Length: 97
Ligand code: HEC
Image (cartoon, rainbow, N blue to C red):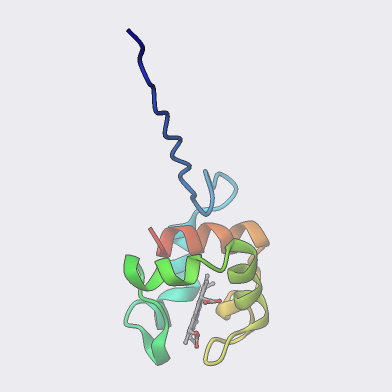
């Protein structure tokens, strides 16, 4: 008698594991809701998983660069003048979950 064990390792990819440094919700409400709440100029909406999933495939570094440099209708920095990289990552994680 023999058993075949098929082990499937599911690697779950998340943008960030924890965001202790920054409160994503707070940053989003302060700087990003203006456009991302209603989807101004095609901005992926807060909590719109489908819209964010396609963006997330770019990887967090690219998304971070998009916010910092601006992307089409999104101004550089996403209207947050004092956000650090961690702040942006926390905000992205909050919007895209
Ligand atoms: C003035 C409006 C505006 C504000 C404010 C704004 N965004 Fe955006 N954002 C957009 C638009 C429009 C897009 C879609 C750009 C496109 O793909 O053409 C976008 C796209 C993005 C993307 C996806 C980038 C990519 O590479 O696909 C991220 C991430 C993002 N915003 C994060 C943020 C964060 C974080 C904030 C707040 C700190 C913020 N945005 C504030 C308008 C805005």
